[in-house]
Length: 441
Picture 1 (spheres, rainbow, N blue to C red):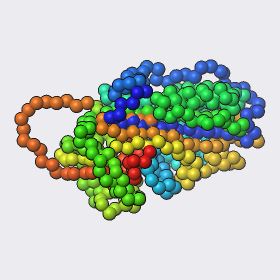
Picture 2 (picture 1 turned 180 degrees about the vertical axis):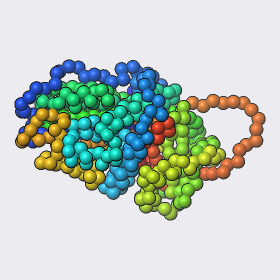
Picture 3 (picture 1 turned 60 degrees about the horizontal axis):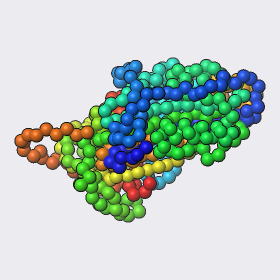
Picture 4 (picture 1 turned 90 degrees about the horizontal axis):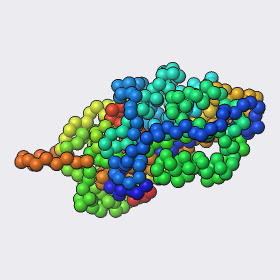
């Protein structure tokens, strides 16, 4: 895709790899071979020009159909994972909680017993029945993918099953029907499988993630579940390029020179205890980037210790339209996140235990062929520029005469800050991260 340098782009690819102790030489019948069902076949142009980006679908559900309990669970899970990632590494971080949630929910359809219970607790879904979870994600994904002018969200799911493994048809069909997942049966250890999986990744992330696999999967790998989300949006009010200037950003290792974008506008603003926050809406005003900047002298990591789903919801209800000036640095991140340890710490360790995991609803394998989760990882990309965001992922002028509005706030994100990309119709958090150095990719 030809990248417009003045927009926001974000994307994420989540992968869950299942393995069997005895590899793939099991007895049983494999699912029928065939081409993968392609979700979302209709493609529309990018709101910023260039290659087509995201599928435009006629929504079958309205935002009111999305189960608020599912959104609340996803929000709790998002901040749980953020804390785990923060404890593990310093510096910039970025991930997609919704992509990870969907990939694990598809995997959970094959879990049973304590493994199922542990996964539901980790995802904060233990108060919901299985069918409520499936219906909830089906409605949420449908609403998110409804195209609007200037903003597009594309979600895609796929299951890559090793040939010769007796997968249960109910497991495959639930993921087909509820998650619109493409299902492919092939020799996972072959070079062809590696090429086809990487090709799917490249297509669904518009080339922002070139490959997931560097080499064929190991002999004990029997299933790869993938979710990809691509977000491409213009700001409702773009930052003017001629106002972008190099300014010092006070990072943990001293000042760095950052390209700071400035905008004067009336925006949802919150002057909180020890912080400032602003919501920057995207075109159509159905999604926004929420930016939290702790006061000078307050470390972001310390401030984030009090942030959880309940605090987040209180903040979301406290913003008020206020006229002011916002300064936000341009930044780009690309990260590869191994997530086994984070999920283990959150209570899902049994799913990774080759002796205790129970995925008996996934396959008919028994005895020494026990199935367990081998690896969960996410690759992410975000690019924030004057015109909008791509995260893997305009202006009307009316002439008139009026007095200049009074500037009542100034917020310059010139020190470490937390941000999230949120669907404002449902409250779902699509992406979340922190910037400690906007010059580091």
